[in-house]
Amino acid sequence: MAKDPLGSQWKTLDRDLNRIGQLEMATNYVARPMVGLGIAFAFILVAFFIAMTWFGGSEGSLIVAAAAAVGAYMAINIGANDVANNMGPAVGANALSMGGAIAIAAVCESAGALLAGGDVVSTISKGIIDTKAVEDGQVFMWAMMAALISAAVWVNLATFLGAPVSTTHSVVGGVMGAGIAAAGLSAVNWPTMGTIAASWIISPVLGGLFAAMFLALIKHKIIYRDDKIAAARVWVPILVAIMAGVFATYLSMKGLKRIVKIDIQTALLIGLALGVATYFITRPLIIRQSIGLENRNKSLKVLFGIPLVFSAALLSFAHGANDVANAVGPLAAIVHASEFGDFSSKVAIPMWVMVIGAFGISFGLFLFGPKLIRMVGSQITKLNPMRAYCVALSAAITVIVASWLGLPVSSTHIAVGGIFGVGFYREWHMERRLRKVAGTVPEAKIIAPIERRRRKLVRRSHFMTIVAAWIITVPAAALMSALIFSILFWFAS
Image (cartoon, rainbow, N blue to C red; front, top):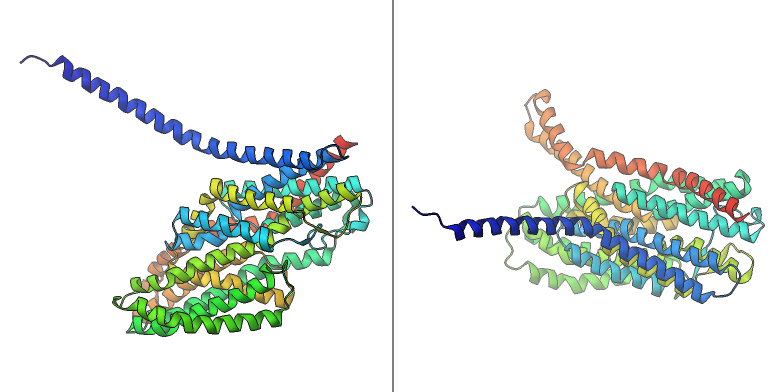
């Protein structure tokens, strides 16, 4: 039988085209991170030239422009790391897609920063160092520059390693290290540092406890009831009303400070009023939404989906209103010192600085955020809408309680602590149920499967990595900042 030369040629052509296609796919895969880096670098350059144009010809304009570039770099890292804590639970619970989460977070973070954030910020991160100890304005600017660089580099490194860390604590460590290098140990306000160190423990523990408490409530009042849908019709409007009241209180205290100053008593009254109104609005909606749902846990997830999306958006708005101002505080200090030739414990943040912070967060979230969002949302413990709702609610309540007690807390520590709280509560609850069901079974025969299931609920490797990153954030940023300050000061002199 004669061979078909055209057939062999077509097969060879198909193989060649397949190899070329695979090569193109591999090239695109390798080049994808470079595109993100290129866009980030372009944004940093834009920030540099904006500052140069704004301060063109003035003394110290180069320092301000360099600080603006580093501030843009810091904002990108905030978007890549810090924002994941707000959106991670909603994405992990499949209430939001990755694209939807990034879009909502970008809009809400920017709105919070530009509309309600940072009218006045403590340039030395809430009294970490005494400005009187650093008498020379030039030295002060180099110290703030070192703090900004070290904080940005540390957050970038943590993002690369997949560890959510507090950007505020990174700035605190950077300012402390630069202050020690510039004026010695006496320049640091050690009682304030002690309070911040205590928040490393207080923030995640409170977040975890509140999240576990709400999950226990949902399990006992809804999930374990014979008629889950009937129980949900009673309790879901109450839970949504609690969420609305808590977030109204949270935003009244933290998100509207640029517009109006509200004390905690007034904020609580606002939250109570909005919570009651939300209950009467959502109750008929929940009843209508629950019609036709099967009596199973999967149906309950539908009822918690929309409240979870709103909670993630509100958390992002509040984060933009608060943490962004803290992150660009050193940049604001440098701008103030350059404009007025002196430095102060409190300065107003110029709008162009807030714009850099807001847009930098959006770029960082879009380009580099998905990695941390996936880690926080799905790799620590498995989340569903009910568990993610508990995490979001606990974050807002913890901030309110901490503000009432006068304790500085980290939104990152609270959110991740809430996720751990949910996971560890599920472990404890599962062990308790298994022991109860086992009854007469010898304990030795049930310990092994309990331990196996426990390890599946919370990944210990992530737990240890994140806790270690939290512990060393301030010391690492401080050491890096002191070294950078010494180098900068040596070159300047």
